Amino acid sequence: MLSVLMRLFGWTYIPISVIAKLPFAMSVVAVLTAVAATRESYTLAGSTAALVGLGTAISGPLIGAAADRWGQRIVLIITALANAAALFGLAVALRLEVTTPVVLAAGMAIGLTSPQASSMVRTRWLYAIRATLTGTDARKVTSKVLSYESMTDELVFVFGPVIVGIVAVALGVVVPLDFAAALTGLGVLAFAVHPSARFTTGHVRQPASAPEAAGASQPDVASPTRAGASQQTETAAQPAPAAQPAPAAQPAPAAQPAPAAQPVPAEPTRPAPVREIYRLIVLVPVLGMTSIGVFFGASLTSLSNFMERFGQADAAGIYYGIMGVGSAILALSVVLLPDRFTFTARWLVFGSLALAGSIVMHVVSAPLDVVLPLVIMGCGIGPALVTLYSIASDVAPFGRTTTVMAMMSTGVVVGQSGSSALTGVIIDRFSYVEGFHMITVATTLLVCLGVVQLLANRPEHRRRSTRIA
Image (cartoon, rainbow, N blue to C red; front, side, top):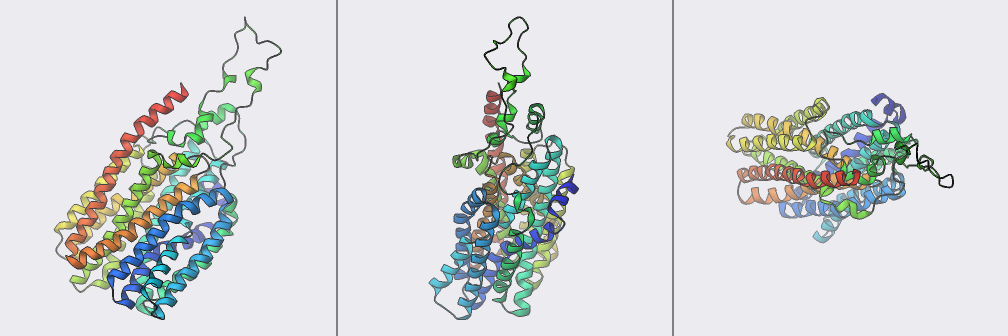
């Protein structure tokens, strides 16, 4: 089934999509590194990084909505060029030692112009699946694709900071900004013009018979709910009038057309209203992704300070990579989980595993001691990230998939940038121990949001039952 999609996209899609994602993962760390080293101020560095996150939070959903309305290609081209200019502009500003307001403005511009390539990669997969597959096949391939994409997200968010560190050591502390600008200009533009861009505006599935359409829209018992995607499924989920034959003794009058003559659209033809995006069932996964971003930022910052205390600051990226590799492997293995292990249950189980690992972090006393808690946390965060994206794809209103996916990706960046800045301030004032507390706060929030998701599902199930009845 995946081979069908690869024939549609071509094998170049995978490397191009990964390269397009990489600048998104590098930007916050590159900004922190460059500003802190050139201005010798962690406060200014944290503030600039926080503005990158704030700008992304403002523009991310708007860029996603624009892609849903006008297609990804034009939106990606504009934002790629603007973002590359903003990254390069900050590099020039730091080299020229301009005033602080200019540096802060450049950080804000980087966030406002973030291309949201990660969310658009997922959207193309999802629309291609809906265009070519139905029913069980579509659900299975969706799970595999989201697992793969979450694995690549893990890898780029782990190795993005490592690349920044290597480039900074080899070529200079400001050069990572130039490198990120070049990757944005080349990678995102290549992704924008890739032929897969035709899968960017809603469903394009060929018309199907009413029974097939109805069967394809049945809710997955493994899903917490598909009712959140009511704009996508409610029409097809309702039994077609044609399925109920008229009694033989009372034939329908000749002047009245038989119900079978009335076409039953399998899917809506217009995007759902914008207000559907702001329902609780859609926002909770976004908040969950934000908590994972907080986890990433707190983990990297506190781990770096911890390794620095033992004179091994250059090894922080290697240890962080241990967590990322394990997380990526477990994320890819989610497809092997049984359907009866629902998305909400996975959220709670894997979130709790990450929480347990964060608690173990508090008892480490030497560099090698952190390996075990890092592996445990990675085994929880990877599958949790896949699960959140799976839930988001289920509950995204019809025609708003790119918007919801952009909100998810934005949540990671906002959480990471804000957490990096806050954790840095906490560590400067106290120590890495308090930084480890931030990791525990992030994983605790992830579990609590899982409970909220569990409670939010119940009225959604009741509302769907009422509609079908």
